[in-house]
Length: 181
Image (cartoon, rainbow, N blue to C red; front, side):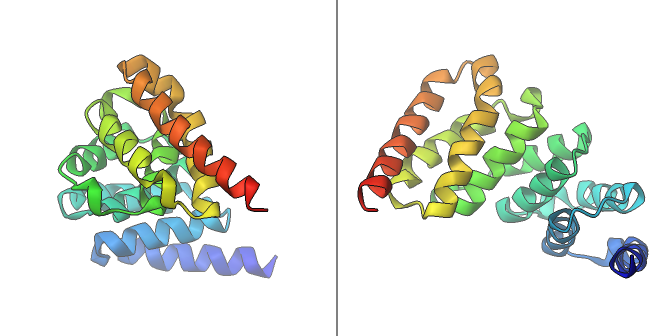
């Protein structure tokens, strides 16, 4: 209908200007289109190309939004995942909140590219353990889903113990929430 035509026109404009976007802008655009369920291979290809070129400028939030958007529309771009994860390995995860960490874990679990996340996953799981007591309900649900999705990668990479610690911490918070109802 009319909404679809409008989104197609918007996607064309964005695709033509995608090189001018900041990493934050790329993440926001990708998240916006994926949240609307709008898939355009040429648009997401252009976003991926631009994001790969700007990967070193992406912060964890930008990378999280980009990876989650690509996971949501089921696009596997190994080079994009590798570039964003490589840069994210330098992140000081201790300062980041539940939404970023949960979203990053969810995306990695959905994209299932273990070789790109081998040194990143333990840091994310440790941060999930630390964040669990203060997670808001919506982030708690996202974190539970993320751990389920990332479990095969955690097993493959030999960080199953960390995964179990994260699951226990999040499970404890779920019990607190349920008891408070």
